[in-house]
Image (cartoon, rainbow, N blue to C red; front, side, top):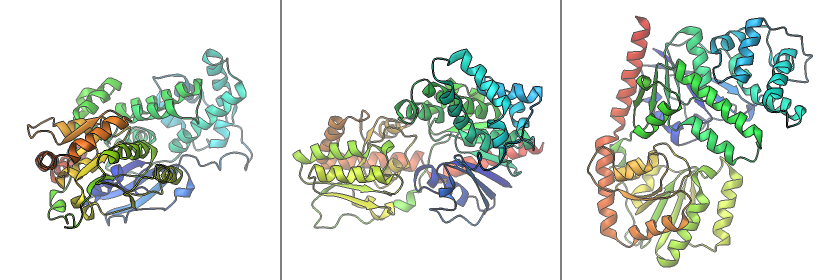
Length: 472
């Protein structure tokens, strides 16, 4: 069996989260050949892999969304679209009901280049019509170039013809879901989509807060990503999510309910047995967080919550464990915040092996503003460490329990609530017996309900079922 896994902005360039899950999936199926189709920002990412690829990876293909070598270096040859091609392109720009077969066929036209399409007459006239219908209160020149910039990555995706495979597995519904949908259309091989977060909602939240896009363009970008999700849901044979609330959100957005299923994350309990504990002379109450030091993890809120807890309980020590190089400016801001607060007992470890550290932790802390079902919480549970976490993704479900009566495994706080996070840290810091009980509750939950072996067997069965249906 040959499976093409389509990943966007993560594996094998970034450690942790979806990347760890992807690497584990591939490693657990040595009898399956994998092609990795990556979607990344630009050529600066080329070949900068953070993972040693498993032996059953037979090829890695890279697509660069901001590949700017498309205009100005070669003359633009005139392009005249057929009536069907023009209507397909118009539906892509105008409509939520996109003629995706027409769009996919348009980009099979070998005479189409990024130059002659985006700089051509047809694209210009369609954008003018779109502008006059809804957006004529802004300057047209800026609007036109925004539309060219917006459709450049779409065109880059669709001009990259996929390799043939027995199954396409997209780990999102965005550009990777679009590319997977095109592969399904071209080769009629099944398409499996696994959402670790709900892509449409994540992009919407990101765009609303973003400085790089303003005014009416926020709505246009949000609509663009919604189109990708609708396309992916339409072409997918099966769509997985990590927990029930996420599955319900997929259905609300437009995925047919009969295509959806819940496949939780999993951990290997044996990996967390016999961890090295605290040294006898370690009198600190260790608060640890395993993460990428990026804005979405809201490390600044973490630092401030720890700061206020530390004023009351001086035995606290904060361990911020994970890479600092993904967004180095933000990481430096976090380091500067610690210095500005004159805050003692804070360690930035950089990349770690979690099993070297989790056994030494008393409390696990997660302050993210967006998550799916964090593996880091499950790993903390496997190490019998209780959690204080923000109420994002499935964090509350993991801590309170959704399918068991094992009991509370930590404390949930509102997003960005420094006071509630600080209170949660202090509640656990003051009560060693409570920490032990909650840690054991989390351990039982992780071992019984979130075992990696069960998760991987679910995907192995999905691969078999989808490819066997296709053979019939």
